Image 1 (cartoon, rainbow, N blue to C red):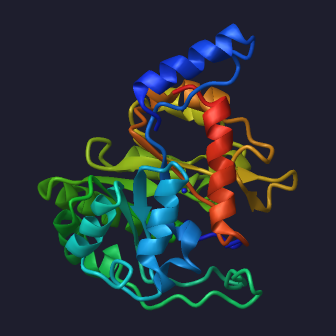
Image 2: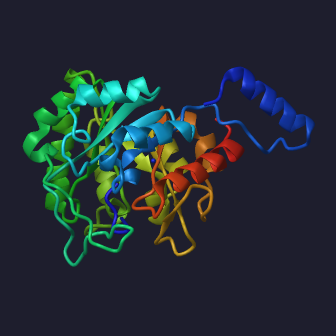
Length: 307
């Protein structure tokens, strides 16, 4: 989620639409049947001013699942977990997953804070993290009734940091399982950069308990790092129940709405059953207009993804 540039139709209507497409010779235009989620970090700069209004627009754009993230108000957009769940459910949305930090937030050496659309450095409030507040975060997620708790990021720049990350992830996976949650780790591209002769992401996969530590694969960051998600799924079947779906421009430096960039999502979605994918979340880090972005992404998904 944190980057330096910085997620359904009725069945009867689906059958009719697909039949019409075939009859009209436009069989490439699919109907997206799987629920589509959105990662609320997409709305970081606007959601706290009007949480209910933001969620209402998300629902109107065709999204039905939510993955929550960081809030300038703290907590769950200024609410307790149960309060946020009630608001989401009342609007017809399912609060599926929640992101938390793995360790106290700090920028990598030499890095600058991402800028907001007005060009100012992003301000991040002090946040709880799994290293220091693991049980509290697990308990809050369980209280909110989400299915998944996800570690948004954790330092992996040195072997010592990777080893510490493995300890934290395994501990959290165990605590989450006891609370009835599924725990997962969300990647950026940094985990694929070798540290000495080791690749951090490979170690996270091999040294964490596959039954208690799943992966939320951010497709764009993985592909930016030169990885093929389909090959990852084949190597670790059913390890990737959650995905983040965002697109990148030709430079692979800028995030743009899904379907308007350079990434080919069709073969990835075709391998959803191998991955064990249960939910996916459209995400766009710090967009100029988050509502336009999620609308454009939804239009692409409806027309091009058959799942």
